[in-house]
Image (cartoon, rainbow, N blue to C red; front, side):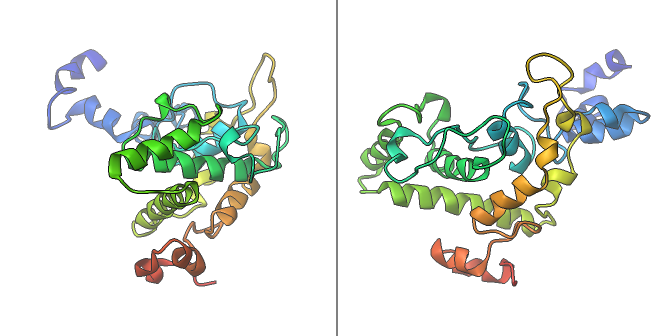
Amino acid sequence: MLRKNCSTWRRGAKGGWGNLLAEGPKQLAEAIGGDAPKWAVHTKGGTPAMHEWRPMLGQMLRELVASGGMKPQGGGSTKPPPDLRHRENWGPLSADNPDGWAWSHVLSEQYRQFTGIFGGCWFAQMNQKADGLNSIVDAFNAITGWNFTMDEALDAGHRSMVLQSLFGTQRGWIADFDWQDVGPRFLEPIPDGKYKGFTIAKWLPEMIWEYYRLSGRHERTGRPFKDTLEKLGLEEFTEWSQLD
């Protein structure tokens, strides 16, 4: 069956199985039918990066709250980056305890979003090294001739996070999809090895709710609160803010 459809995979029309593959694993599994949806690994219909994320709380939270598939930003660390330890006094976080991970991810998403929106490649950054984050801001200032501070950089990243939520909100997305629209295999307990039995699912949806609250958005809808928009200079989107 796949061989029969191979000739259509690279066509602009995306015919046959190529069309289904382009739609993502969730849609492909539904088209196959039977037990296929139980085996599809997806977040909101998209494919996560192909690593074994399940024992890593920060990375799993990142994958779940991303816009879907291979578009995650952030990824909480057990300790704050050296360049932020003068203001962030927490950690090391436990790999088997949800406390602190939501804020760790919010913070990491802010500086990673900032890096991304000015075209920086995150793989080339060293956030856990001294001057790792400072060098990102320095590079931005050298390119633009501006004088951005770390606070302004984090606010820019936060602004990008909120704009993504607004874009999704305008198209029917709600934050509850982050934990409701996930392939079962992605949340199942690890079957063997060092982390046997571990799953982030035992702390859901509370971890996701905390993430949204800490970033100034409603935990169930994902909509930003009005004061969040005002803080970030995004008042033009007030009509899409959370009213209560």
